[in-house]
Structures are given as structure tokens and as C-alpha cells.
Image 1 (cartoon, rainbow, N blue to C red):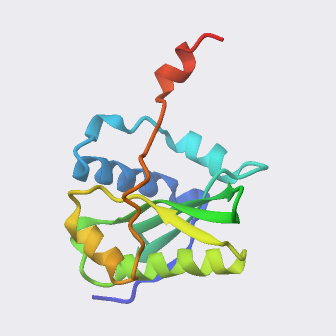
Image 2: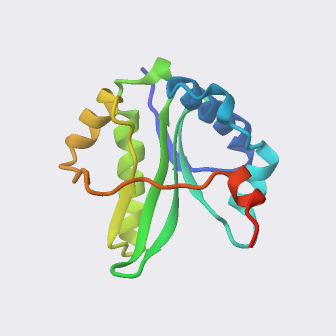
Image 3: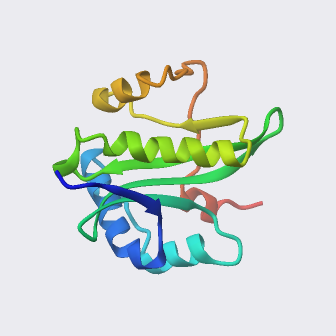
Length: 158
């Protein structure tokens, strides 16, 4: 395999980024759940106050991996990094690309003096769980994931 380069994501990468996001949704058995568009990604990631940042893994001008993260705030700890998605195209897994992307997010967290880096992994995704175990990850079984989805938010009456 040729050399993979890891770099900050650019606006021009967003169509390929969306393809990777859609590939992840298929892998996670949620194919119809992706509603974000390239235009929304551009507005939200490159506006006056970016809502997320990302790194890409590139091979021959093709994006084959993505690490998308954002800054969150803990009232106990201060700045934290939340890794929303770590995606490697299925054809390019097992070549260390995920590790390179993950390490780049750790570096970004270190640069801003983040006190914590967090992410989620599906309980059935053994390859990802085993990957994260190599980092001596703390898995927090006492925390439950909670959410309201878009329709619930929009239909809520005060």
C-alpha cells in the first residue's frame, strides 16, 4: 500500500466525507438515517464558529478515512474533545489508518489542553472495541446515553 497522509479536512473534501459517513451508516445498520448534506457540513464546519473539525486520511487524492470531532465542555473538567466518528473505508481497514487518525485527534486534544477525550462505540462492534482497548480505554458502563431526536425537539411545546 502506498503512503497514507493524514491532514486537516478542507471544504473540498466534504463530498467524499459524506460518502464515508454514509458508508458508516450502512455498517451500523442505519442506512436511512443520514440526512446531513454537503452544504450543511460546509456551513457547520467552516462558518464563523465551526461546530466540528476533522482530519482525513488520503491516498492518491482519495479520502479513505475520517476522524470528526468537536470541543465540548465539562463543568467538572473544562475543555474536552468528543470524537463523533472514526471511519475507515472498508477496503483500507487493517492498515493502521484508524490508528493514525485517532492519534491525530489525541494530538489535537493535547494541543488545546483538553482534560478528557470521549467517544462512543456500539456494543456489538468488536473490531472497534478491540482497537480502543489497545489505548487502555476506560469503558464507562454506569453512564446511559440519552437523546431527543429532531422530531421530538421540533414538536416539543413549552
